[in-house]
Picture (cartoon, rainbow, N blue to C red):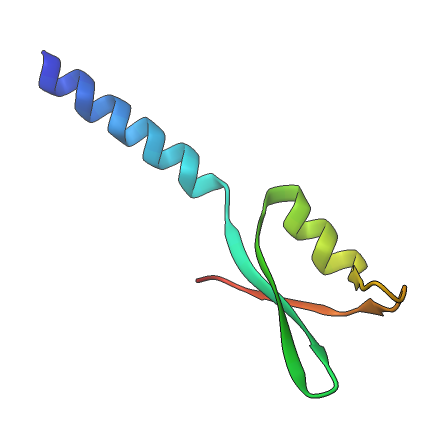
Length: 67
C-alpha cells in the first residue's frame, strides 16, 4: 500500500511539473546574445509577446527555447 501511495504521489508531482513549461531566453544586442535566464508560464508568454526593456528603455525582441 505504501509503495502504491508513493508511486501515485510521484506521478502527480511529475504531471504538475510537466504542465509548467520553462524555457531559457535571450535577446540579441549588437551581434551578441544577452542571456535573460529561465522563464515559465505566463511570465514566459508575456516576455515573448512584449519583449524585454533594457536599462536604456530599448525594448528587445526575446527568443526562448526549451533546455
